[in-house]
Amino acid sequence: MSRPDQAIHPTAIVDGPNTHVGADTRIWHFTHVMAGAWIGNRCVIGQGCYIGKVRIGHGCRIQNNVSIYEGVTLEDDVFLGPSCVFTNVKHPRAHVQRKSEYARTLVCKGATIGANATIVSGVTIGEYAMIGAGAVVTADVPPHALVVGAPGRRIGWVCACGETLPADMKCTRCGDRYAELDGLLEHTPSDPLSSTQETLRTD
Image 1 (spheres, rainbow, N blue to C red):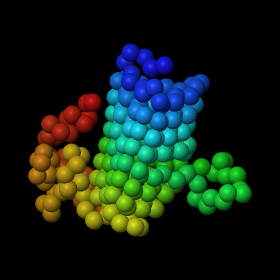
Image 2: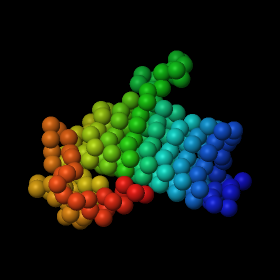
Image 3: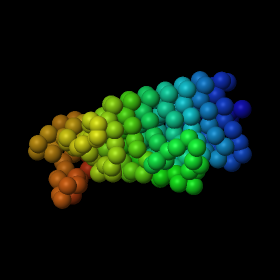
């Protein structure tokens, strides 16, 4: 049974023991949360999801039909689009037990994974990265990268607010400036942080 500061639909199953569901978190129809899962505050988990023994940070939004298996960690403010897929074993076989071989997958703060994208186990998706719908991610993704295709490839950069950055690396939505250095994106230190960045840092 949910607490007054939670909203867990009657058709959802939350197993115990040692399962944590944070304050102001909503879990919708026919979702199954396994024993030992840790789900932060202010999360929304849609219909028909499976949440294994994983850690999900604060403020995450998980859309319908997403399965998050043991070995996956979501940091704060991660968005998972409908029916995106995580794997957790590199070389699966039905007749071989490989539970001791789960590869660790980390989705860092503020990242977005689009609908029907596939995240192959053992990768790290950097802060505020954007994975396009249907992409297949087989390697680490740097922070702020915009990745599309199969296999996934970087085609640009995105601001922390989610806007694709133009050639001059100044966000047209919030005004933040960035610089590309050695294949990575950095916030320009000479610019004061925008209201968007301040909000993301203090939430």
